[in-house]
Structures are given as C-alpha cells and as structure tokens.
Image 1 (cartoon, one colour):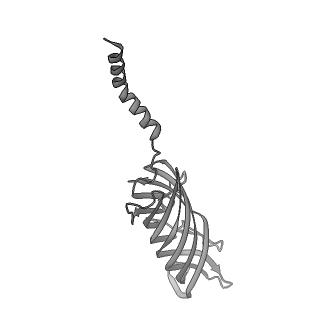
Image 2 (tube, rainbow, N blue to C red):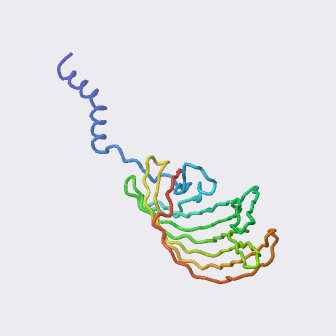
Length: 246
C-alpha cells in the first residue's frame, strides 16, 4: 500500500473524532435549566417543630402555575398564578372541667376552640439567576378567624358570688399582600424558599363576652366590640417553603 493511500485512509478514519472535538469545543455542555417545570406545589414549614402539633404543620399550601409563555420569551423571566390555602384548627374532642369553689379561682382544662382559614390567589413574577430565583408579586383573597373560650377568667364579689367569663371573637376580611422571596434549587424538581410580605387589609371584627354563674350556666352575653378596621402589617419571615416542581 502506497503512502498516499495510507494517508487518505487515516484521514477518513479520523474525521469522526475531529468533528466530535470541534463540536465539543464550539458547543460546550449547556447549563441545567433550573426553572424547567411549569407547576409547583409548596408547603410552608416555618412552624414545624419537634412536637408535631396539628396546628403548626402545613399552615400554608401553595400551588403555582406558569402562564403567558411564548416562543421568544426570556428563559430567565417567568410569571405564575399562585393559589394558597392556609390556616389551622384547634378544636378539643373532649374535656372535663374541674373548679375550686373556695374563691381561689377556677382550675380547668383548656377548652379554647380556634378555627383559622385563608384562601388566597395572586400573581408572581420570577427572575432566574442560576440556582437562585428572585420572585415577587401580590396575593389577595379571604381570611377568617374564629376563637371561642367559654371560661378564661373569673370574678369574685364581696357578697360571695362568683362569675366566670369567656369570649367569642370573629375576624373576617380581605387582605392585600405584597410579597418578595428568594428560592434555591437543589434540583430542577426540588427547591426551598424564604418569603417576606407587607399586608394591608379591611377586616370586620366582632367580640362577645359571655358570663357563667358558679354552676357554669350562662348568665349573660353582650357584644362589646363590633367594628370594621383597616389593618397594616409586615412579616419579615412569612414563609419557609419546601417545593416540588412538576
């Protein structure tokens, strides 16, 4: 075999390797697209504690769905609808009250009942920066809180009468919540985030005082607060979210 033919064979065999090396140099491995998935389910873990109390776990569940994506939209700038259900309930299944009638005050098992529910919807803008995502937006919806404590204090009079007092309280309204958060992706499907918020709301409040005699029979009931209020508040750490993306 002459040298010219051998040279041509070696060159033909080397072509795939040359092409691969050129492609690899010109088109390096692309970075992971951390915001690849359009849906997200997040659970607020801020109040999670070792006691695993019902009213401290999963106080907020958020679902997000991206929308408005077009062919030429920036891959690092997205927006999502977000829907949130939150709250807790503390409702004793059974209790037995025991009282000391020697004017030393009542002794009883806590029988306070609490129901807190929030239903919110909003919009969120997202800016991706590698593994990190900065997001901000607005939530609004309905907030409902009701608390009942039949006996939380007592009064003893000079004539020997003893009365026990409790209350019912209702707060219901519409909050407008501006929020901002920072998210970190461990994987395109898993992330954690912290979120802060600023809230302005309109709420209706109702407070009822309830009195009982020494035998725990209801003796009087009256409304001493019935008002509409404008509320304002900030939360530097509103949520600590753990999220799954799908």
